Structure formats: structure tokens, C-alpha cells
Image (cartoon, rainbow, N blue to C red; front, side):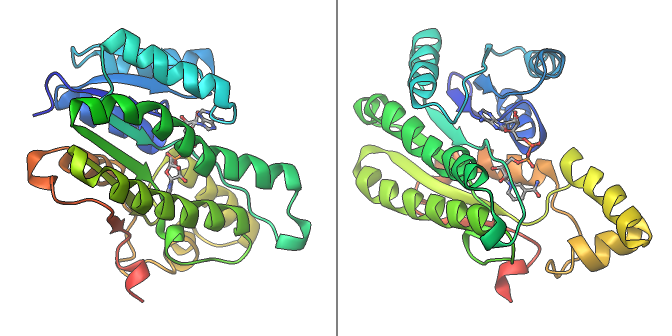
Length: 259
Ligand code: NAD
């Protein structure tokens, strides 16, 4: 379905981004991967995606550094000839009451989860506009629509990302480009899996109770979102059927933000 398309996915060496790289390569797209994992983790992730037979490149560009982001986008354009699909997925989290929130953590969360998307978009858009085709997908979160205590920077960044998506969708609407957010609730990733064991220990609860009563307290289905459900939604947004979906914020959150 996406044969001949070139996709750039930030933060694609782990979790949701790796699942997206997998889904896009399986759909026939070439993929530029990115992430800050260990050399071994990156190599394993790249091998996994290469097994689908499309072209795969990797960049360790740090999404906190605008000069590295510009080079990352330019390199992808040079290696593939174009960027057709841009997915801003790299993200980090930190949890603390706002008055204790370390300013450097605030800056890092806003930088990686929000400002990096501004930099990738401004670098990739001219080529998409020239070719009159493009798909930009931003991995936001249920926290782009609602807040939770102690996540001030993350909630601010994700609300900002939703606003950036809508603005760029309007600016590009007549250029064959769509810009959307995907907003997952809790996704079952290694990151979340580790939290379950730690929380169970700290609260002296069973893992099953931690999942249902702590992590999934806000998610009415009481089920985790899967990486595949998020990744396949991203692939769908790149299809012709999704041409008129732009400026949308697509919730995949088991009903969380319906409440
Ligand atoms: P993850 O930790 O498994 O993956 C994050 C990826 O981002 C990794 O590849 C990491 O190397 C990369 N990264 C981190 N800092 C970077 C930097 N400075 N420069 C370049 N790459 C960097 O996390 P995940 O759970 O897969 O999350 C991916 C995205 O999905 C994030 O934007 C997150 O906010 C969002 N999200 C996750 C969940 C969830 O429950 N896991 C829910 C909603 C939204």
C-alpha cells in the first residue's frame, strides 16, 4: 500500500515508534529510523525493520538539538530522494508537582515532545509542498485533550502538539498534505510493563490490581491500547481513504476522553 513512499519516524527504536516502523515497512515504505537507545538496542531495532526488505536508514539525531534535527531531515531527503511521511513520535515523561518540577526536565519535555516537531515539520514541508503530497502524523496523547496532576510539562507539550497539528493542517490543506495527531491512552509498552511491577511492589498490590485500579483507572475499557493498534492507525492515515482527514486528533484511548 505504501510502496515507494519514504517515511521518517522520530523515536522509532523502541515502543510505539518501533511498532510504527514495523507497520510502515510491512506496508512497503522505506523508513528512516531515529532514537537515543544503546548501540545494541538500535542495531536490533534496525535489523528487525530491515527484515521486511524495504530501505532502512538510522540517525541518532537528538530531538533537543535543532541543528541535528535539520541535518536529520536533510539526510533523509538525500538518501531517499524525498520525505513523504513524517511521524513525530519521540517523547519523554517526568512526573512531579509543578512547584518541584525541575526546570531542566520542563525544558527537555517541551523540547522533545513539542519543539522538535516544529523543527522537523518546517524542514520537511517545502519538499512535500513541491510534490503536492505529504502525511504528517504527531504522536500526541490523551493528555493532549485532558490533564492529570503532576504531569504539567507533558500535558502542556501534548496540548501544544495538538495545536501545532491543527495550524499546519490549515496551512497545507490545498497542497495534498494532511496533518493529524494520534492520541493514545495507556499503551502496553516495555516502559509501562516495568511501571506495573514497580507500582505493585510500592503499593503492595497485585499486578492485576495495579493495571486495573491504578494505570487503567481512567480507561473505561480497562484494557491497554496495543502498539499495533496505534501503528495501524498511522498507516491508515497515509492511505488514499484518509485524504480528507486533516487537522484531526484521533483518540485511541478506550473511551478515556469521552468522560
Ligand atoms: P519509549 O520510551 O518506548 O520510546 C521513546 C523513543 O523516543 C525511543 O526510541 C527513544 O530513544 C526516543 N527518544 C527519547 N528522547 C529522544 C531524543 N532526545 N532524541 C531522539 N529520540 C529520543 O516510549 P513510547 O511509550 O513508545 O512513547 C512514544 C510516544 O508515544 C511518545 O511521544 C509518548 O509521549 C507517546 N505516548 C505514549 C503512551 C504510552 O502509554 N506508552 C501513551 C500516549 C502517548
